[in-house]
Image (tube, rainbow over all chains, first blue to last red; front, side, top):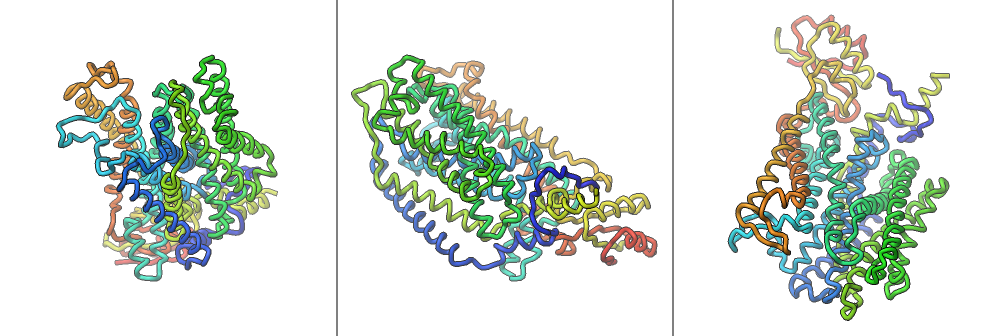
Length: 464
Length: 172
């Protein structure tokens, strides 16, 4: 069988690795003991998470009046955080589904962690609309169930209900996609496990995966079809999230470019979060051979592309706000009114973080630099949070009725819940990093001979 | 034919693939192959028919789509039509554009989940199911072919050794 790959393509697996080396390297973080740094990070995340739980309990017990919302600005941090977290989730599906359809081999080093990030981020996202309902015990009203109050059905004309279906489909499909891919890797851990408890847990998790030929054939077909289904799904999710805004009549929200622009923004922020997590993980879990400079650079290229789309959308929005000639449009989140008004700082945070700083990725030196990539990923995460904050809060603070124009200031509860979700996210991710095979090792083995450094060198020497 | 099984272990996917081709040429019946990762071209070499799971996914998708159409028509048009925000629900055709997102989501939901459930059932994967790979190394870096054999196995053993098998075991 030919494993030929053009020699101009840089190797995706560095060093002199064999199949067994991949097994050992992927199993090492699971079989080893957590070091001090992991415990410190875990403790910080856990404390943040517990603080968040406290704030959520306070909100539910007292009512959402404890937030900084007012009559005019009736959506603020909660929906900002919701959109931010859902957006972050998009990168995982993009990497595992879209890159699979495009047969991009570099996805195999990073897809597992990116999908884990997706699932954990969507958990956080889902919390916000539910808490915002106020009476969380009635959250099941969003389901199309005949309820005890008579058969009053849900309203299928509402984008908020589309969101319920989109997010729950997205979460559950991502989960089974991720889990199906995990089966062979759990089986690998099961067959290596020495301690009986570990063996038991991984036998349970691996669903008795044995690696039969027919199973692999179905596995590959299922992965391909799931990728085909998840690709339009991931585009639909943020499209529908954007329709929460675009179908309203608030100036600045009522915008037809929202769907594609939100999707690009979601991928932009998601890849930034993958960068943040993986640049740390490759060091901490000794996976430098598998998550290489090539992976980081490729992700930076995706960030540059989607960041470019987002920037074009910003310019379009800014132009349209001016060109519409409507005085209300002059106060939308991308307008002269926003740039010079009371929310100037939020406006400029968005422009600097999302528009200006990412342009540095045009330089190969910078986009192949780990430290700079990490720095930029943090900047984009902040910038994308501000984008949603600007759309929601600046948009709402200046409506059609100037007498009700107002500002928004968050309370400690708003801040606390946000910090809590960040804590929850990292609690989940840190646990994942120590108990799950963080690289899709079975798939990675299938590209070792075509994209492994030692095999590539071997072929080149044979040709000469 | 007695019901003995010969297990041959290989440590390279290319050697395995050529061995499978040799076995097929010599008209041996391959019972099963256990591999740690999907070896491309192997199912063709063994002569395994294509899986029909993608066809099932399509059918499940059609079911999901039909369910979405039926559900929204029943709830919004037939059972309790309401006038929400000046947008009355008189007929399915008029409301249809607003139903498209959920038609799409339920199509994907049904196709994805029912396909994965079908995969797990057909390949017998579920919690508390015991693994059936005879050698634990086949999830790491070894490959195993199982061949049903009669009493005379010398010719087969020679063939396998020549093809590059590392170990050969016979199980009753």
